[in-house]
Image 1 (cartoon, rainbow, N blue to C red):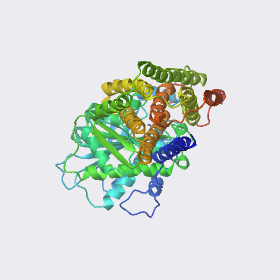
Image 2: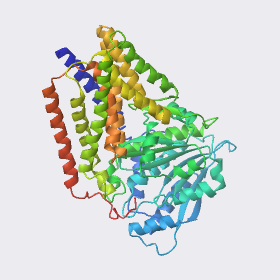
Image 3: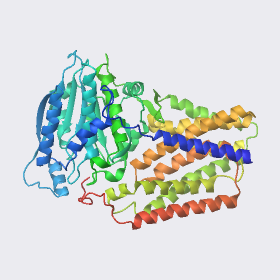
Image 4: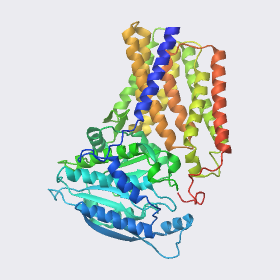
Length: 567
């Protein structure tokens, strides 16, 4: 029994270590880094100027920042044009929500820079970020980090010599006012129709890894291109679904409406600083800036020198494995993982199959999913996640909400896990609900189902191996695969919990249930009284955090206009 517990705890330890690796930031490079590389320290010079004060559309600070950015582009060889567009009524309404002066019609002044390549007949590449901030926020992250990443990437590109394709830069104005500047460009400017690929940079926070979270529909070739050219990647085709639920748009939205090809990159860590008065250069994580810049430079360099650019093609499954490398493959292959995983469970149970045991296992997993979801949603409501609330104050509570979800999931898992290692027939039943959920996701969103079907395959394969091979080497290999799957789910869960702060039941219980399925073959068993005591203690901790969030005063990071309806 002790040896079994040692193996189980070792799997958990390795899983946590891998999850930590998957969220590790690169070290910011100094000002004396090689000239062809991205340096966060060099980029911070621009960030400090950009975020020296709030600069919403129509303000004097916005105008002065536009002049600064135009000058920076011109000194690096760009021909810069100012694109003037009237501010739409929705934008004027948001200015009023911020408490600004919307009595006179305003215009946005976006900056379009063009740097010629060696072959001007090829489709150009566009790098894009917005230079307006919300009212009362200096915007060091949103979107000072994006602007500085582009400027430092251009410097590094120029240091490597002239590139093949024209490089376009759009520093849009009015993004915070319903994407006004970018929408005017993509809908009206003839040059927009010629663009071969876009890299857009955004932020919702001030830290964490930078994720490539959105591409155009038909992203097969563009996903392969990302996987082939970006080192230390962070991406997931599941993020497309998550992003659709979030109450946000970016300047890439009007580009995708025109069926242009593009990558959307952003970071969402330190969410309390989103649109905050405290979103200053000092509070921007320079490791985050380095990660954004590294990906921007890698994509830009590869796209600018590509003989052919990615074209619209069937969607691919895309994800990174702990930042070590990215995986891209046809989404239909996940059907094979799904069928293979469940078949392994069925094969392991074939000789001693029991309908009663299988039914009991399925009921137990359904109980975990349904009762766990009820527990999470109930405690989430207790923390005032529904009804009238302050969106930004909720963002400030993200770290506590994440721990709340972790403790509640542990409570649900301890209540679910059996006292003894389950039989093959019961394990088959436990796998059945997850298989059905995986099949539903695979049918509705094929490129997003990998996070269920691959762990299902790992769980089935390790269950079969542990049932049929009494070999230390096989046990160690199976344990390592289980640790990789569990670590990935922990890392992905951290990302999703940061993104969807008000949907804890939906986003937390499914990964927890998949982790339970993966770990079942290694579960050494625990007496019911100890399991229930542990479950009660974890649930109490989760409820305590919910009460803390509910009773806590409004965070100091919250924007002054919060609650008026303007994000």
